[in-house]
Image (tube, rainbow, N blue to C red; front, side):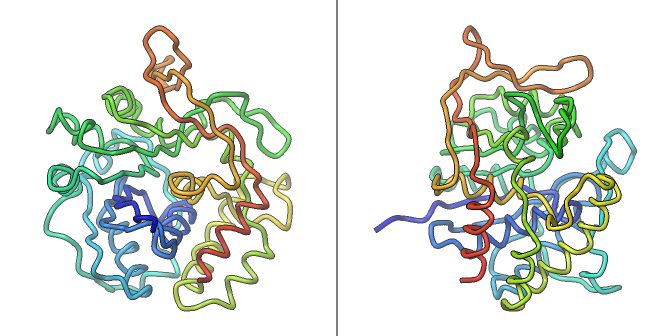
Length: 309
């Protein structure tokens, strides 16, 4: 019998819809035991409300949701994107219970209590860096850290090559990325050069509409984000694409490699000008597991199959 992995999901849910898709995957896959959700980036309490409502809809409001410290983002010292942040999903004045603990405290205390825990960071590294500073032994207490981010080969997107600085999660708070990702965690990278090719298609959205209340809640968020994504991508985005699967691919790669290939590489994270970059560094890098390719249509089918359970 396979034992589910106990997981803390650290997320900037509410901007790109893929955070919600990752949360749904973690809830529905039998090999994931979602222990807690922590929120990061600007307006973390609103993001926590989005996560809490999704958990309520899924019948899982037993899962703790903790908001991170967003004081620096509120002061404008970070360049966090703003997206939908609950538009069309959170009703005016709607409130759901969240933890009295903040995200940093939850991560430090829960990893001290259970050394089997794994963490997936599918947003900026701000909270993780603060947790490492608060508890130097944290990397040794975490079984594995999965990171949605990094760039290891040319990044192609809709027929163009993008600069590595497009790696949003590592560059909202680049100094935090350098501190957290060089701290000694056993790390899995699911990099942008792979995830920028992993699309959810309209056929998947149509099937999702036929699902339960959680699936229909995901549809609402996908539709809001698709409009924003089309404005940013212009006419290059094909009509049958509705969103990217960066974050679901990260969670899935922790438990099932049916649609991906991977390689071990010595990785270090360093500032390159003002941006955080991942580098293959045989001299000083720590060996990490790096996802190298994805069967994108196959993965989208797998994600849908899992969430429709």
